[in-house]
Length: 243
Ligand code: GEK
Image 1 (spheres, rainbow, N blue to C red):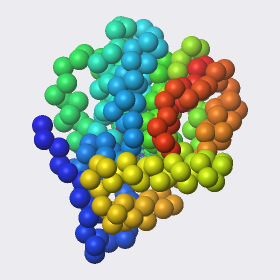
Image 2: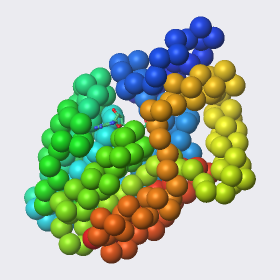
Image 3: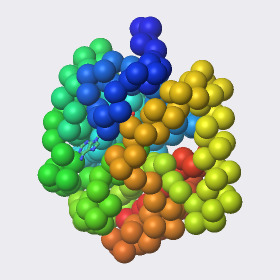
């Protein structure tokens, strides 16, 4: 399948509305996320391997903010344990509609339920794996403690949370260095200075990154026993937390 190229912010007269996961974004999403998030293909593939390792028989696996289902599919393709069920959640109708078509063409047999809802309203129950790949960053900061707490409480002992996020750095020099490196990554992937600037404006107050320290503290407060970064490229990182 050929991917639609992301040119959403290439127009000098593009409207300056805040970024939203609408039909236009869903149409170009695979191209957009690959050219914008360093390490995204690795994170998705390793999410699948981690799910294969941590899934326990008869448990639920959650993909919160599933978009087009890349992490859902990676998990589904790696689960060997019987009686598992994947619950993929997104509050964008446009994303879920396309996600449904993609999942329908996959032949692996772990059942997948697609839920169109704010992830804050979805009960987490009897889970062995919960994945938040680049989703928590879109949740209001004051709601994040509760999200992580509910995930912790819904995991079985021995279960895992995979949390991938854009991050900021306490050290202003390192913060600037990583912002510049990400900028270079986007230029190298064919985005123009104009597109990068327009997208940055659209994401202001929509994508709110925190430091790795804040994530670690929140995860510890929720009661997870162990937590560390397993992948990082510039200002994009993925943490693993064990209950
Ligand atoms: C991937 N994980 O390809 N409730 C449910 N979904 C939400 C909410 C919310 N409150 N807020 C945002 N979303 C995916 C990529 S994209 C990351 C995730 C990005 C959804 C939103 O609709 C979008 O589909 C997804 O979270 C974030 O592995 O675009 O940078």
